[in-house]
Image 1 (cartoon, rainbow, N blue to C red):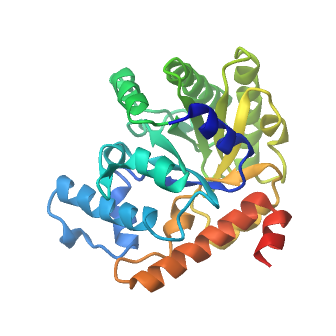
Image 2 (cartoon, one colour):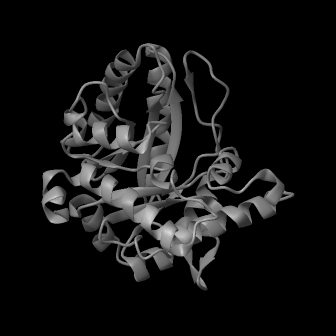
Image 3 (spheres, rainbow, N blue to C red):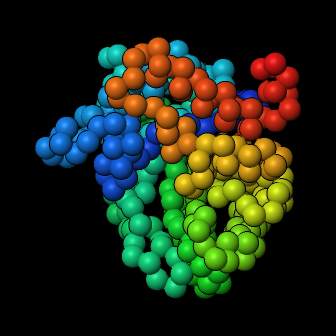
Amino acid sequence: MSNAEQRTKITSGKGFIAALDQSGGSTPKALKNYGVDESAYSNETEMFARVHEMRTRIITSPAFNGEKILGAILFEKTMDSDIDGTPTAQYLWEELGVVPFLKVDKGLAEQADGVQLMKPMPELDGLLERATAKGIFGTKMRSVIHSASESGIAAVIAQQFEVGKQILSHGLVPIIEPEVNINADDKADCERIMKAEILKQLDALSDDQKIMLKLTLPEEANFFAELISHPNVLQVVALSGGYDLAEACRRLAENDGMIASFSRALSNDLRAQQSDEEFNAALSNAIDKIYTASVGKEAGAQAA
C-alpha cells in the first residue's frame, strides 16, 4: 500500500470519511437502528458478527467506493476481519480506493470537570504495530466535552495530543477528536476554549508532525478556519454528533474546507430488512447528500 498515495487522497481528494467504527458500547444501539434487535444475538461474539455483516453490506454496496468516499474509520474487530476473503483495510484500499483508519480508544472515563477523558490505553503500542502491518493509514480517538470548563477542556486536548504523538511515532496519522456535546448549554463557549487549546498544541508540533481533527459542527460558521489552514493539519472533518442527516449536512455546508466524517447520519436510513435494491438506494442517497455538503457547490454542479 502506498502511504504517499493515501496521504494525497486524504489531503486533496474530494469526498468525505465514512465512520464505521461503532464499538462495544454503541454497537447494540447501532444494530437496533439497523433493525437487528438484541434477541438476534446471545453474546458479544454473535453481536460483533451481526455488526460485521452490516458493515460488510455497506462496504460491498455499489454506492460505497472511492469516488465520493476518501476514507473509512474501522473498529478493531472490523480491521481483524475480512471482506470477501480479503483483510478489510486491504479490501478498502485495493478494491475501492478508500483509505483505511482505525478507532484506537478504549472508550470514555466517567464525566469529571465537565468532560470525559479517554480511558487508559496500555496496549496501544501493540495495537498500532498490528494496524501498521495491516495497512492502516491513520487512527481516531474520541473524548467528549460537556461544558465550558477551561481546565477540563485543556486536559482533554493535552491528552489527545499526547496520545497523538505516540501514534505519529508509529508512522500513522492521528485523527484527534474532542467532541463537543451538541446539547451543551454553553456549546459556543466550549468551542472557543477548545479551539484556543488546540492551537496551542498545534503550534508546539514540529513541521513533520501532521495530524487530523474531527470536530463537532460549530455554532458559528467557519469558526474553525484557523485550524483548517494550520500547516500541521492535513484535514478537519466533522462528526454528526446526533444531528440528523439533513441538519448535519446543512451545518457542514456552511463551513468551508471542512468535510464530513459521519456515522449515525450515514447509516440512519439503512435496515437489515431492506432488499439490496432498497439498501443500496438509501445508502447512495446518504452518500450523495454528505458528499455534496462536504465539497460544496462543485459537487452540486457535478450532481446536476
